[in-house]
Image (cartoon, rainbow, N blue to C red; front, side, top):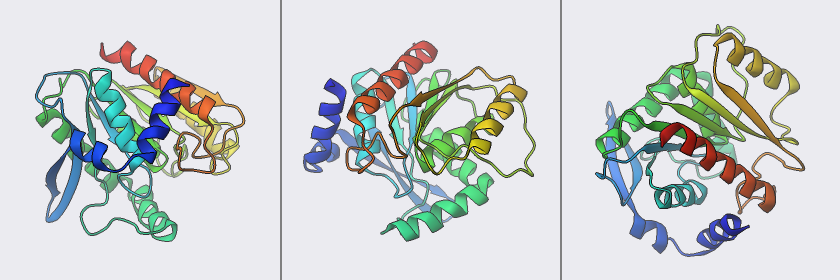
Length: 247
């Protein structure tokens, strides 16, 4: 339970811990300013992990993950998908904004790719980069795999698994880990089945781990869905996967 206690402690602490250890990085998509965050070990030529946050934008869960990954010897960069001035203030606006990027997946993929470039500029070894994402960000991790971005692997943590049926399946070069809560009502059996078919059609190296007694946001200590035991297991599985593919 050590990680769960650490993560919960970070969430209850003030923003000082995050602000002292994560540096703001501004970049652009055309005229739109984006504000990501990078760990303090930037420029050290280490393996890199791009973190895609949940639907409210950069949050404490993403920041805690970045600090945890830094302790494991990775440069972590948290992507800003929405951009300055567009951060949701409530669930309704988050659903609308995230929904736009889910529908316009190429725009989502572009924002992910721009953040990936910033991770590389921060010193991450370009041959040893992975992407992890939570919730909406978990959907983004799968979109990165579908776009065959130059990453070794992706981790989708309670992400949306479905895609538009009109989109064709293609080759998938990244290794894929899906961490799926068993009681996630936002993912249908058809979504799950179609993702398995898609990964097999793409000849991917994939695995799905399903966590019992877990609802959608089971890894977030601030969520009523939080399951400390399963959150710890999911984190351990993430670290195991990253160690295998990046070190």
